[in-house]
Image (cartoon, rainbow, N blue to C red; front, side, top):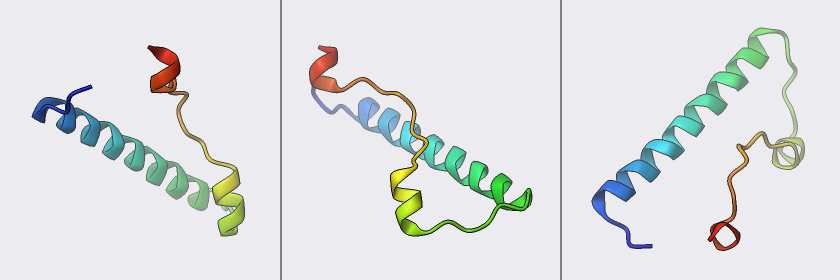
Length: 58
């Protein structure tokens, strides 16, 4: 895949929207009385969208 300026912008937009959604989810969690989680819990319980692997999807 060639990284054109449009592809780079689309990738940046996708990642920024994912970060904003994650931040919104965390703020909502704490607003509703959630307790802080350890770094290990955060790393092992991620809520990431299902994205096919590039090599397997081709």
